[in-house]
Length: 64
Image: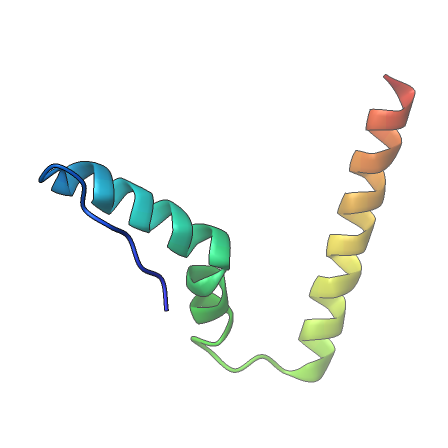
């Protein structure tokens, strides 16, 4: 459970901090993943695409 303490009545700051903590915990991305059923083949295809994309990123960083 994510908790944030409101200091000096600063609700806006606490809300901003809460949203950041929730985003870092990965809850929104998990909800997005489980919104629809994906077939196993499609899941494997997406994972493979992700691996290729990450390898390209890594290669670009090494070349700089």
